[in-house]
Length: 303
Ligand code: CP
Ligand code: NVA
Image (cartoon, rainbow, N blue to C red; front, side):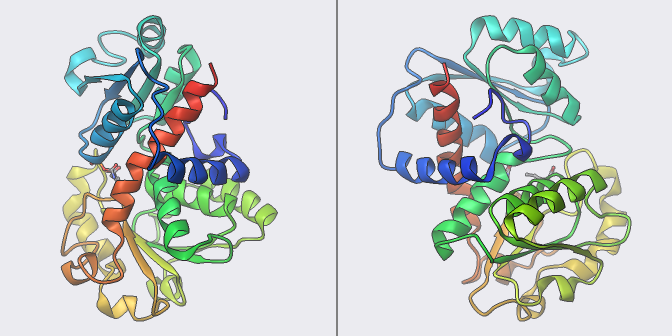
């Protein structure tokens, strides 16, 4: 693995599969590679899953964790991002960063000597996508040739899922309203990888076309952190993309339903689907712990 995990593009398809194997392995093994080491969480946004799973993962590896809340250090305001990165590198062994601008994670990685892991930026959520595909791999026994349908906003989660799908040979259809498509640079990158792995990536504004024959139906909130002002307007625009029982009928009968959580019940997904027999959302949440433990294990093993 490279020094940092800022984007799914930092990993090859082989490395992703190796991470899946390590994640499954570390569920059952004690590996105290982080004894005497410290992980710092630098978060500009709130979090439940990411904060807890990174912390528990590092505790289970034998290390200690420091949490720096948004107001604590004023990243890029009280002190420049490069200066924060240089200072942290002198004290800690790894940095996990949740930021608004993707450039902030890139700059932390550039100026820190220690590994930096993207814990969500406005452009990507790589640990989430890896946990989601690990969950698919565990339930379906493979990823190649499966179809994931992503419904809703072409956002950070959609970007990382597209990049991961392309690298692990899964087909993907993104169903989103016009103007809310994934960013062209991510579509291009994913298409390039999809060509190599033999997978297909389709972007459509038709939710039914996206879900048709899908093995996995995925959705995320319609307004991400930082877009709260747009929530009311987005509710109307995204309504046809709600994952509900009727839409789910178009997927395969054994389709999995995924959501990164937190969910806005009754908006992007209905209660019956989120809590229903197809839903694997809590397996995804659990797998955040295992995949991040595998990532931290691999990154610490580099030194
Ligand atoms: N899925 C996810 O990243 O959840 P949190 O925002 O609670 O960390
Ligand atoms: N797209 C969401 C994901 C939350 C885990 C956000 O950025 O808020």
